[in-house]
Length: 117
Image (cartoon, rainbow, N blue to C red; front, side, top):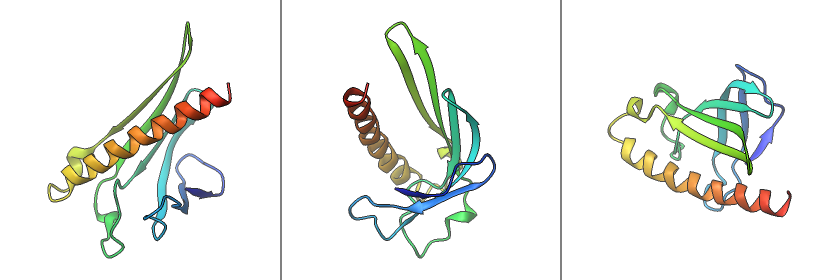
């Protein structure tokens, strides 16, 4: 995702998705909380992939990134909650796609941290 502009609590964050096959989609989330180097959260509409659907009518999920110091370094916890508020017609698919997406992103983060200690 190419993000447009800085992150500000309570403000939307937008950008262009660059992942192959999803380039036609825009990234849109609302930043909820920033505690530099410790915590970051936002709300968004997961797997909002169909341009003909108005996802703004759904309650968004909450994504939280938490960093905790450990004896070995730093632990990153990523949690996404609120799937129970997504319509039952698309809940399972949104969860499945996000589960797969987050697994890939965690590998990307691990690779980046390993190469840039």
